[in-house]
Amino acid sequence: MMNIVVLCFDSRDQRMEVFQNRSSAMSGAITSGATSIILLSHTSAGDDGGGVYRLVGANPGHAASFQNTPSGTWWELADAVATPQQFGARGDGVTDDTVAIQGVISAWPAVAFPARTYATRAPIQVPTTCLTIDAAGATLVGPGKAAGIDGIVFSGFHQGSDAGLMDGVKGQGYRLPALVGYRRALYIRNSAWLVIELDLIKDSGAGVFVEATADQPAQDRRFCVQNRVFVSSMIRSCDAAFDLSCTRLSTEGIQGNWFGTTYVSACRTAIRGVFDSPDTNYFFNEFYIQNLDRNGTGTGAKCIDFNILLNSSKNKYAFVLDPINFTGTGDDFVNVPAGQIIDNGYFESNSFEAYHWPSFLPGGDRTTTRPGDGTLAIYVDPSASIGGHGSSASPYNTIARAVSEIQQLDGFGNTVVIRLATAEYSERVSIDGRYQNLGNMRLILTSATGRPQDVVLKGGVELRGPIFVLFERLTFGCQTRAALQANDGATAQLVLHRFINSAGQFHVAAFNGGVVEHHTSYEIAGGALAHACSRFGGRLRWLGGTVTLIGAPVFGNFVDVQDSGSAAMFNGIGFSGSAVGQRYSVAVNGSISTNGAGASYLPGSTPGAAGLGGVYY
Image (cartoon, rainbow, N blue to C red; front, side, top):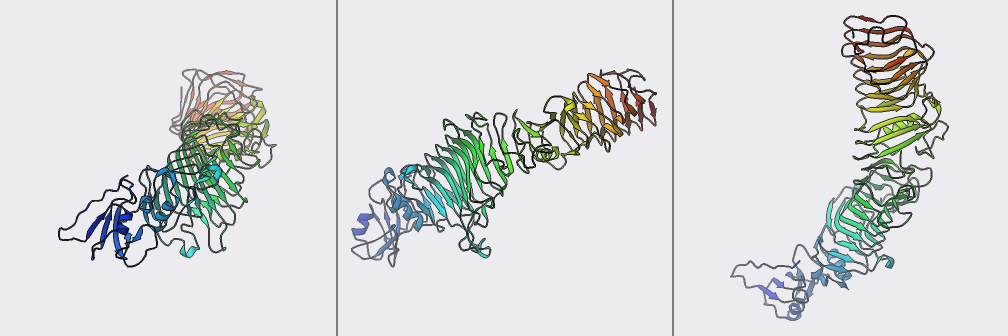
């Protein structure tokens, strides 16, 4: 970027003088009475260091000023936006420009970098007085990460006690240069409300390093909150793309920040956190990585690597496209201490089918997956300890715990399978989609052994809201409520299932627009008030296979359909065995369709009854 000086002045104004560079202005004669002069360059033509200078009364004390020797007058850069070249930077990628860059950033509130490469050999400390930087197209090159030199450091922005916390300017915008070859390329320490963007970070220890230290003193707070950092091109070949460090003695810790990049490639860790205590405050942060490529980083590379996360909550980890070059269980992908949950936030990815996510789920209040064909398996075993996290090695100990986590997933077309260990489950299971964002997730509850007799659900299962659940190879039976009930638009599908005694209750019930569908053959080994009941617009469907009745189970009605809009439909299903009780009851404008199979089609020992507008056909 060249500084273009446009002179627009009245022909009567004879006080504007032009000098080739700083040296000539220092030694040349300046007309008496002049208040402004122009330098075309700093040292030599084309170095981008020119600018307009104004007469001042004393030494301003910074490098963009000089004293004219013949007159003894002092002159100071008058440009509203200053450049490193105006402070002596060469921008050739070889000469150490640290002093010039630090000088302009320390002296000027607004700084612009011409699109050149600048070598630095010490950290560039951005003071709170520098309100904006525009360095699009520029690059800072350090001595390499092993040299232990940081790139650009922001420290102490908007810190302090409650009384002064919201005072002053917030949300300063910084368009930084690309950063290459530093210990910590972008270092944000105890700072808040920063808006930072840069094109590239590579060949560094930490790409973006965020640190909240201890309050000093206790009433003078230290924290990193509400910062936004975006690396628009990529973070490449770093030990960690985003690196967090926080102490419990920081009152607010690291909260409410947004960190993003288009591409992370060849980094040992995408997101790393090192905290000194389970009481460290790490909340409400969001990480957005569009493309994640392990790309030859070697065995043991992680996507997420935290040492402590017990007090973290509601953080989001978004990987928009499928991570590549991760092999899954061999790399573990996520590393957290054994037995700990990664946090109570949510995870977002296109597909998690190929990866091993130890300790990541339950995921908290909005674990998310994006469109794809991924399948997540979650395990339940009543004999497991309370602290399980849902993996096969450390299952949840109740279905309610698993469902509590699954209800908070936003699946968008993916499949989540809850695999149930062999046991009788006496707990009541409720899956409520009315106030949870289940999206279009496909949820499956299934026997881990594949045998329906091994898993008996005796506490009742109830679905509510616009959700879809497949029950596969399970046994249902409940003495106090319907063994399986779909309400309020929920859909339950059953495959290769089995029913046992549910005396005084229903085996299955569809109420208020709920739907229950039987897709395959199944067994009935115990009676109920009704095998299937529909009320208030509920739908019951049998879509194929054979129903085998064992030991002549007793029913009040085999099928009971009441109320307008309620219906039961049998499509090509057969029956084997016999039952005791009335075949059906249909009334109040309900309907039962057997596709013309006849009045004695349904199991029972006495004829069915249709009344008050009910239809059987």
